[in-house]
Each structure stands twice: as structure tokens, then as C-alpha cells.
Image 1 (cartoon, rainbow, N blue to C red):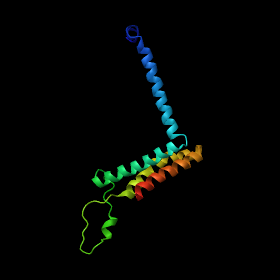
Image 2 (spheres, rainbow, N blue to C red):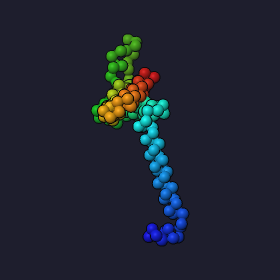
Image 3 (cartoon, rainbow, N blue to C red):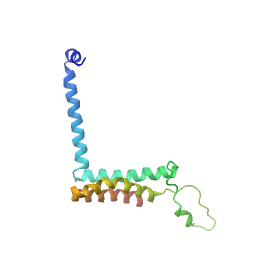
Image 4 (spheres, one colour):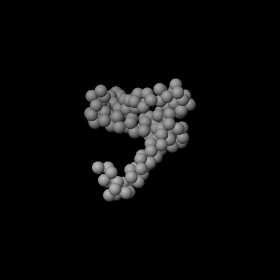
Amino acid sequence: MILSLVIRYPTFICLSAYIRVEFLLKIYYLYSIFFVGTRESAYVLAVTSAGVSHAVTKACSSGLHDNCGCDRTIYDHPREPNFEWSGCSDNIYFGAEFSRQFLDVRERNRLKRNPKLGLTNLHNNYVGRHVSLYL
């Protein structure tokens, strides 16, 4: 079957080789982002950490997870005596903690092999969580 395709369409071989080369270039690009300590990889890791934290926080507030829910600390601090809080505050601390546990495992394992890159990536993950907590 493949031989008949090659005979009918001689560009079939070139196309499959092109697809393989394009795939290898994409893998090399991902390698350069996650396994080499560059400014671009720092940005990607920080944004990923902030994104995971934000997504988990929103899922908790929406009631999509069983293990978390609304942030209850705001109920303890009323601003006015006759004000009653209603609604669901975002549990950003749970989202940040989940992001830390989820993303930092890979970097902690990397500390044994490449301590500089592992510590740098742990810092970049922290920066992303910090931004999502305080901005």
C-alpha cells in the first residue's frame, strides 16, 4: 500500500520527511524552553506556575473540586458592623499551595542532577505563585 502511494505521489516521501523534521524542531524548541536556563524559560515557568495557581483557585471557587472551597478567612473580618458577606471568595492560598506541590516536584528531583538549574526553576515557579497571590 505504501509503495503504491510512493509511486503515485512521489512527494509523499518528502512530505513525511518534512513532518519528521518539523516534529524534531518542535521537540528541540520545548527542550530549550524547559531544560536550559534562559530568560524565556524563566518567563514560561513563572507564567505556568501562576496559571496553574489561578486555574485551581477558580475551580475551587466554582465548586469543581471536593477538597477545597471558598476562602473562609474573609468572613472573620467585617468592614462595617451591619455588613454581611455573601458570595464566595477565591481561595488563592489553596491554589498557590497546589501549584507548589504540583510543579516543584520535578524541580526538586532535578536538584540532584543539576542544582543550579533546579534552584533557578524553583525560584521562577515561586515568582509566578507570588505574582498570582499579591497582584
